[in-house]
Amino acid sequence: MRAHGFNTDADAIIRALREDLNFEPRGKSVLLLGAGGAGRVAALKLAQEGIGELYLINRTSSKAEQLAAEPKGVRVHVGYPKNEVDLVLNATSLGLKPGDPLPFDPESFSLSRAEAAYDMIYRPAETPFLRAASEAGCRTANGLGMLLYQGAKALELWSGKTAPITIMREALMQNIYGPST
Image (cartoon, rainbow, N blue to C red; front, side):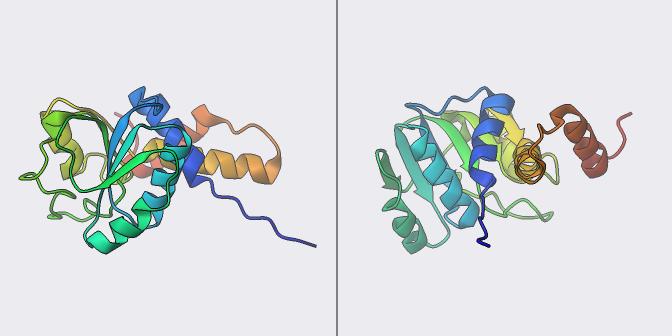
């Protein structure tokens, strides 16, 4: 018997971006914050989806430079963009704990130069990054959609049946954010 592994993160992030932010990646510019596992998956999937430009920021620039060599068919830059971007995507853990700093340097990049912002973090529902993005006029979404679509894809792989997205979303909302009032 041979085992097969699946990564549900890549499809989940793209589906969440499309559904939660009405973001279609083809030809767009993205500032990706974080070059760890989640950032790598996002960078490679965004490149596969045909983004035009990818800007990478990471706490350690050598890790961003390593990741920059991987995506094919897209212009990749290590550092902040000089122009506007279509999306800023936070793939760091900054925002999980109260008092965490922003996952980017506001002196080097203003969120007012972005159309949309997505934070892979879903708890808290509004991180300091998303609050700053909203205040700057960005469309925003948190990582709940990504979590939902990761689980839905896993359920479909395991069961061979279509996942009940609406029921799953309601259960996630209630279990993560509490009963709606």
